[in-house]
Length: 123
Length: 123
DNA sequence: GCACTAGATAGACAACCGTCGATGCAGGAC
DNA sequence: GTCCTGCATCGACGGTTGTCTATCTAGTGC
Image (cartoon, each protein chain N blue to C red):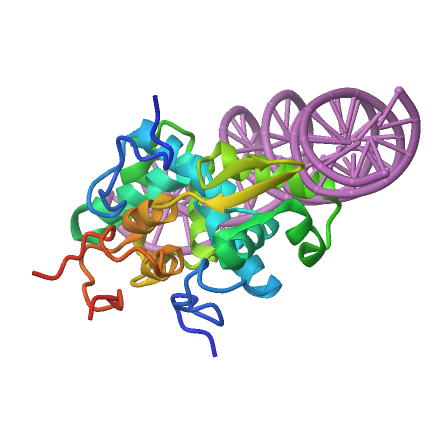
């Protein structure tokens, strides 16, 4: 079974702790590829920071300065990768960040040998 | 000048906390692009997990199953992105993960609203 | 029904990327 | 000096990607 956020085999094992398997590397690179475009990074940030944590296409098309089809294209990629969720509501399509999806990637990138560089949020 | 680890403007501000600037998005996507290839993810992992935290090209060419020029090409990209460091030692070139480089990306991806999903390493 | 709007899809095009074999270059052994 | 080894660079090739315009679909209001 695969969770909605896309956590699978490589869940929570830092990249640098042990050699990653080819399959896990492929799966992981698929997600990084979704983040490998400045427009998609901005879209992700805009959606997350929008009020209510969700936004429709019309909310974010103008800020990125690209055509509506191009924005739809990028959003589709982010949805297919499991980073964004799409919910149709009437004429509008609302996008939101999938909880835990980015956190999973964050965990994989964490350096297991460096404990003080993480800026722990715990008080 | 840019620090070895590549920390710049977008340092430590989670992607989802506020809309990222176009420049920061470009800089960030540049690093994710370096991770957007399964071979480079494996190389990074192989180097980090190799004894001493460093490896020469000959150590990692065979595990990834690609030609030596291709491996050199990928390593160069990882160095240029600030994720790997290169040190020439006689005939050999040793590569190692730049301390904090991945941690920086990890911080950017952390979800500021979810505190319990991080698996804090502190004892 | 019709008109309008939000968004997805299709097709095309230039630019970029991953891979290879061939070659170049520098260090070590002799 | 010559030879060998480890690695980088070059040039080429096919596949992928980001963007656009044009078009299509579906929901809303009249």
